[in-house]
Length: 307
Ligand SMILES: [Zn+2]
Image (cartoon, rainbow, N blue to C red; front, top):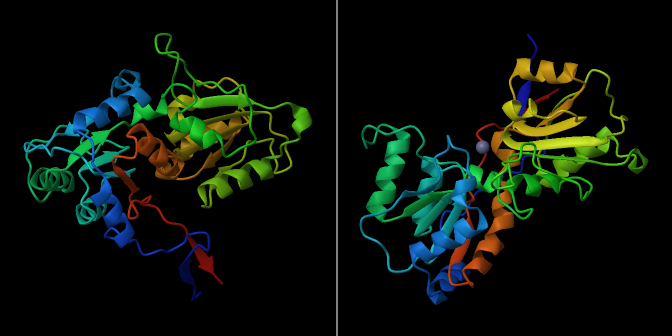
């Protein structure tokens, strides 16, 4: 019998998150005057209008507590609002949670403690915490501020990036596609290294049938999250960066000679929060303490076999 041990990949840093605010953060919060919820929502919608979100989505203020706080002092950013992250938000005295993915999507028929999503809603209501979700409004944010624009900054810069599909009314859309001249000699191995360095994590690569690590890449596209449906709209790309695709979708892409780089769903999104944190603080003239969850993480972890 072969005896092997599994261990966390070296790329995965294991840091125990701080569940409470540090003394300095506590002092910061005490010195803030805060902002009314309505004012914060206005600023969030100025950044990424909810009208830009996909029609099927569930965005905006999803939980509005009965007893409103006069001023929101602590704003807590997360990609996913799991029970663990919710407990962290409570420990850190969050007044408002901004959860990129909507924690309520399918209608809830009852608010009980044996359904994790309902439990989160009940915790928010009991603690008077509001929840706002921007989701696809951030994917389509205007003025080069979309989540996909942030993701594309992993790679060599270009000034010809545009959304994969463009809504004629809003002039924005999901995904991003761009190109480089062949003279740039940007090789696939560098593209893979660049995204790994940007997100600080390993990736999976399904190489196009005629590609090698030395292939020169000219056309690229990306879609944060789950990108298979949007790839159908891309007419010409050598590389596609996304979070997740199924086995058969990957085979189809390979046979279109497209190399797909998979980062795991939320690893293509979560880094945007650190980028957005100082922006939001500026929008609110530093009147609120904006913090990013330390417990929020992709559910998938990479383990490598140890010989
Ligand atoms: Zn997503």
